[in-house]
Length: 156
Ligand code: HEM
Image (cartoon, rainbow, N blue to C red; front, side, top):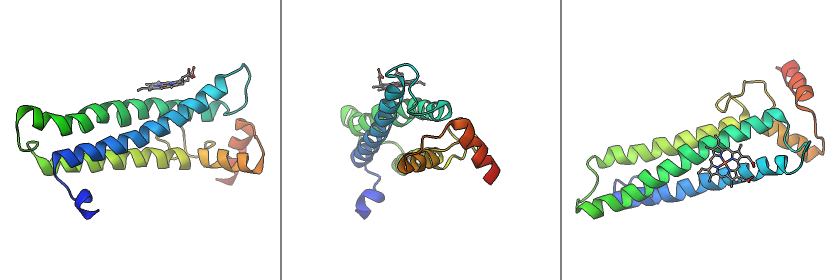
């Protein structure tokens, strides 16, 4: 375990990217399903406008910056290119490892932001956040976004 956390080996870093990006791909996939469910018929009220915008922004960002790019350059690039050119490792193995951990932290940061609503995916503090949305769903209340916005603003 510690070996994986502290590794500077290009193959291991490639595998770390591979599994981490797959998790982000799954999250982006869940977001796509939510978007599609909202758009399945006209006038659905699955998400609400603000929640739709947050999920669409996070879906687009995730698929490009936490899936496609790190999967190609991070996972396949790291694993294969040193093998293909006959090098022992990447040029700066510790910098390579740092890149992975910064990448992982950035993705976690965005998702914590999505759930807590601190303004990364194009919404403002005080907006109707995913945590509030889920709480409403659990209580079986499907509140209108504007109403929720007023409640949250009044509390803040
Ligand atoms: C690797 C990149 C991407 C993948 C694999 C992907 C995958 C998907 C999938 C499977 C759906 C559901 C399809 C459907 O409902 O018919 C979807 C929906 C959607 N995606 Fe992406 N997506 C990617 C990138 C993006 C980007 C970059 C954006 C915008 C910035 C975006 C915006 C949307 C929107 C708005 C929807 C809902 C539209 C709809 O369901 O008709 N996606 N995506």
